[in-house]
Image (cartoon, rainbow, N blue to C red; front, side, top):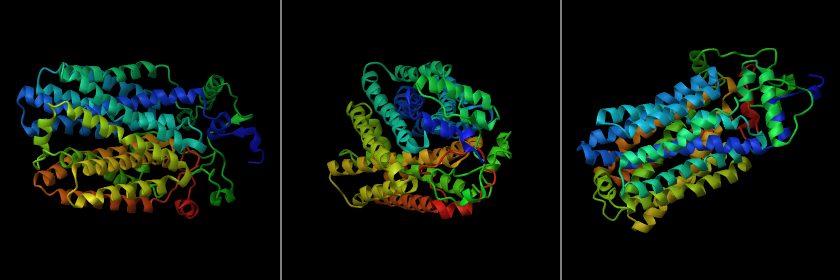
Length: 493
């Protein structure tokens, strides 16, 4: 391209305008989605035991109330990702918010156990749309400080967890679990209303050839931000010169493309197959392992917190939980534990754009490992709680960085599909961890549980090292045409 001053890409426009009022509104809107999701997940800590007591359920039936939500999220992560990549981010977000709000409220009216399980499972499918909100916001953020803002975005999850614990602290002793379910659905109804005012992602529109529509949205954003767009015409992506493929600049897109050759992924099946293309196969498999490990570790730490930090533990997490749920101290403990995640998110925000995604993830995993090591031997209750809080802090920071890293790797044409399936692998880890960890803890094999978590951390670190991309400072790309992954490794690895 001889005169690049006459054209500009979406990333050029976002960089030129900077992070303004619109991005601030988009942050609050999409953050509300994660706030709502966190509340719906945190509520599982209270509802299962409450309905077990009211309906006389067995422990296995109680656990199904939790497991079915994660199973629904597994299905929803993939389904909403396909809808997002093929029909638009906005339609996917609208559908997800509608499912969560309606079924979340109906769950409060469940007449029996079967209807509650079905409704919570459907609610889980709606919760699987959370990654689409994340990707939508990501596509409006300038690349230079994308990591910092995406990390700040993750604070909404912690705020949702803390808010649900506080709400349960107020509601459960005075009312019942039905009121808790109903009140917890309010944020998703607000989200549903706000979705009608949100624009479609310009990056998605560009992949569909709707350049005029994308430009119109950018003009509205510029007007709202009191800024201006670059001079020239908007294009989908820059034409790659022969020498640019080997450039070392951090502004070079990870997966560049040519304007005269754009791959159109028209079906969900083709989007799924492209995850296993030579350029993405290695990263896809490794991300699945990382997400599985992150969820396994997170819920493992939560389980250990409920067993090791209690002076009344009798090597039975289920017995402990049923005793504590009647005590207001449970809500206080969960409130404090949720607050421990905030420093992890802030630490991630500080380092993610400075040292890079992969080094940051390795640092967080190493800190997790250090915090868990002393638990191989018996510690005082206070020290045990502090160590587990530190481990959860780092685990949350690590999860936050992984959530940023994953959608940055995939091109717009399959970003939601790739991220959605990766998140789905995390749901499998969330379902398996309680089964494995509960067996170890109830058998008084707590040391074995720590060893297992350390082993999962080690596998996750190895997987991070083997990923062939570093996305720090990189522009998001729209397609995967004409890229040699092996060449990129020598530049960014």
